[in-house]
Image (cartoon, rainbow, N blue to C red; front, top):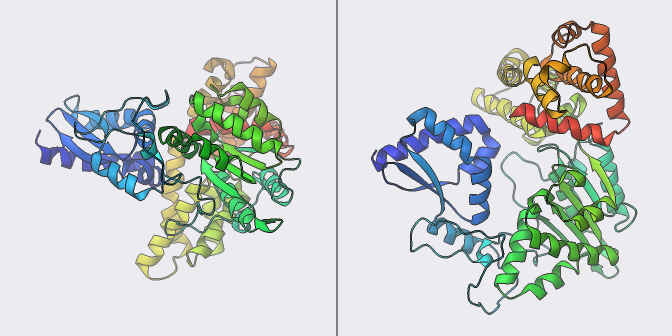
Length: 489
């Protein structure tokens, strides 16, 4: 296959993958990839740094290869490399972490930097200082300073509060008003797209305007990825002490995506020492992760213990009222005229996370601009119906049956059997609750599918799970979040 044919194939693959992943994930991870070379049986895709390469290799490369096989059989293979040009652009665009330091020999990187292929023998070796992308030293830097078009600044005052995030929101306000107090550390967990990052960035903005004596608070917001990058950079630049001094002199440390520290043993140990120093000095620590501390496998026991010493609070996927609030706020932010009936229809039928609701409003806004005026409720509902159908296509009774059984370690037939064992009955109630929430099936239809049970049984199961969630059953919230994530795969 010629280079030109490879380029055409990669372009077609990108379109396929945009549909598979959705616009947000595609734009973040796949769109920046660069076709750097091809030799007939191989397509080489370049990335700008090691972290991106490793992330795509683990999470998206199998899907990319699957889509490629569907189009071209096994004749062409994909390979990820560090592209020198993208690498240099990334390095020049990043802020230097710790000021001018004498550059030592490359030496041995920590075990957390594995050897990585490069696009050519002339590509630069990947030193740890080049991995950095956000400066911990720049404590005044605003992590939310630049927003994609159509996104409002992520501040506390425009965070949409509902039943699914109220406990986390109230805990965040308490930590804001009394930093270093009862809720320290504050650990917020929940599946992707529920608003954790919005809340953390909102806290960052609010803390920056607060004072401690005659000075403003020293506040840092960064992700687990960035903390890892800064730590490794400091080792390579022989500036570990300076990194430690800066990170341990903070008044507030906000660390998002803590799960990205998993398996990075040396970084975890460094963070444990920083955590202990900050906690002992009364500094506020706020953390966020996809899962609660106990579910973070391969995490240093000392860190888990520290995380558990404060408050852990979950955020669930938005319910109808929260989705409606998000849709209204987004419509206002876009100055888009969408009538209330359409917004209600959107909230009722787009049952994904907050990002999907934002995407639905943007879709209406696009049609609004093309048409040159407000959409009729009928036209808007026709547009949104496609999103609703897509969700229903992904999630049906059969899939809920299989995913719930697998999650609770049950054989699929056990879930629909006559068994009244406690753990089986509970798993069945969860399946009934999710079936009602995700498929729109009637009580009778759900009951019939799950073992020929009557509608009253399904109604009781739905009420029971709802009450448990309203009482703030953290473990159940985590269980449902994990199941919903599996249902979307």
